[in-house]
Length: 199
Image 1: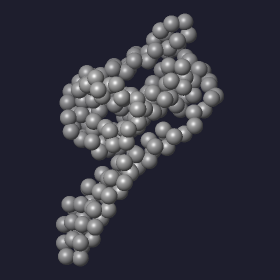
Image 2 (image 1 turned 180 degrees about the vertical axis):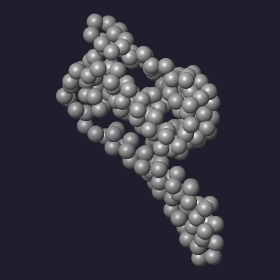
Image 3 (image 1 turned 90 degrees about the vertical axis):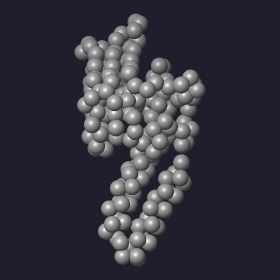
Image 4 (image 1 turned 120 degrees about the vertical axis):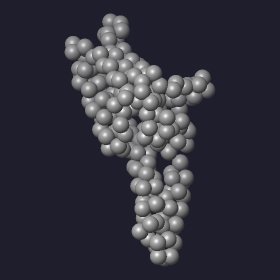
């Protein structure tokens, strides 16, 4: 996965240098610069996800309010789309997180899992990189059983085939339905973090 990204970046840099030597540096920078920036941004996301995927799971658990955890994850998703930048205002968001719900958790791990699930829910409405169609995302939490909390993240997006769904929690480098936009680590990280909490 890293090699394919680096190969693309190397090709872009070599083309830029050839164009500079030929005297068309400014035109080349305008043409190749955005592509290089996109490649560097992807590499940065890939490194961040690789780091999160390989970090040891903390064993310490503290009681955290579910509403706070959900709102922190939502804030991270909003920041992510604002930084790209992507306009996701056409996707209606519905959140139910009762104030009294709390559970013992490693907060960072569950926030990261929710961030990845919610981000994927928004991205399921993506028609091409940076372009979204109208739809909805729901994040609903409730006490499911005595002391068991359920958090559901649902969307009205493109969905998955049975084949995609069967392997969604396995990290397979290069496998992502979003081309160079996604790294393929999001759902495996969410799965690992949730199962480490007994989910």
